[in-house]
Image (tube, rainbow, N blue to C red; front, top):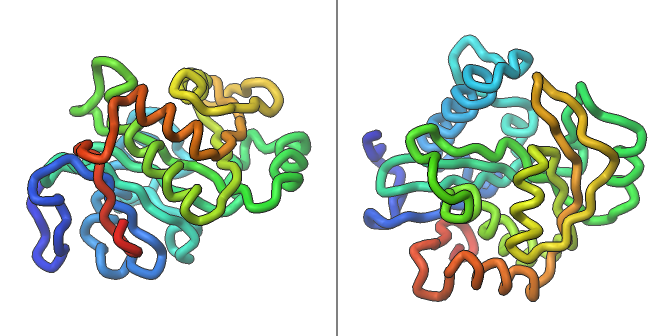
Length: 221
């Protein structure tokens, strides 16, 4: 993967970084976001078979992206994009498995935001999930949520990821039962944000001030 001209400080000088791209700066990182949309298409459409997300150009994106409603979190190892997730508004439930119970649970939580499209490149998978780029992305998302007074995040995902979050120190509340989605169970859960939980998580991931996990984006992140 080549470093695009004009995409300043994209790689963090060769280190592993989590880049945060807020809506206002998305236009400055068109090439990087294009790669993120292609990664999403490879994983969610080509690997998982979520055909309703398919795009002829191989770039999976929707109105959340196009209308500037998402904060993008990208894991980079040098010049390589290894993982991705986005933070979005509370209306981001998967349409095919949306239920009244889920809608009521989200509506009852002011200030909540959603986590979606969490994925890791095939070349980076394997080994412990704790050292997977997904864990580092989730830490960055939790730090961002706390910095922006977001009390809770919700995720509709594989139950094993939610169990991992509990292991890492977060309070996770399951909403309803797992529902089948393209042959895989998907569970809605609410993750409470607190500095204490984040500190425990960082300790268990062995992340501290000298960690390779760094943020780039607006606000000095």
